[in-house]
Length: 208
Image (tube, rainbow, N blue to C red; front, top):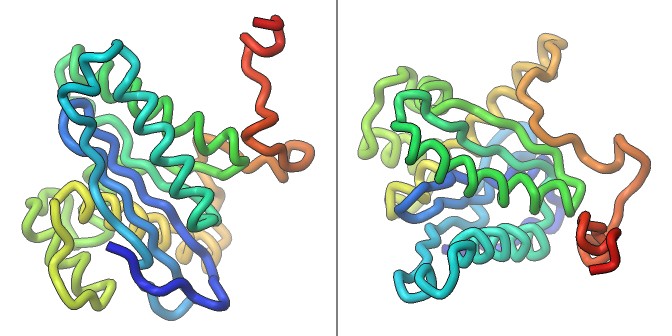
C-alpha cells in the first residue's frame, strides 16, 4: 500500500522484517518530529518456482526489492529486526542470509542501518515485549493513524521496526545518548557517496 509522498520529508525510515521462509515485510514511515505517517508497506514472498531456479534466487530478489524501495522512497535510515536467538541453527542461518543481502543493499546506497530485537520492537510499540501479532497490528494502525489494519502481519512488523527506531532516535537526541544500534554507517561519514552501479565487488576488482 502506498500513501502520497510528503513535499517536505523529515526523518524517513525503511523498516525491514527479514524472513527465513515466509514473506519479508517492509514499510516506510516518515516523521516530522511531531507525528509519524506511513508512506508504503507490504510483504514480499518469493515464488516457489523462482526459488527452485537456483539456490540464490530468493536472496537476489530480496536484494532487488530493497534496492527498488531505496531508489523510490529515498529513506534517511534503515531499521532491521535482528535474529531471534531462540531459533534453531538452520533457520537462523537462512535468516542471516536474508539479513545479509538487506545490509548489502543499504551499504551500496550509503544508508545507515540500525538493528532491534523482536522484544525491543514489541516493547517500544505495544508497551511490552510479549505482544502477539494481532496486538502489534492494532498498535501500528493506531500510532500511524491508518484507516485499516496493516496486512499481512509481516508488513505490520516492518512498520513496527521503523516506529521503534523513530522512538529510539527521539530519545537518543533528547537525552544525548550514544548510538549503539548501528550496523552499517552511511557512506557520507566514510568519504562521500557512491552510486550502487559503481559499487566494486571483489569480482569486479579482480576483473571477472
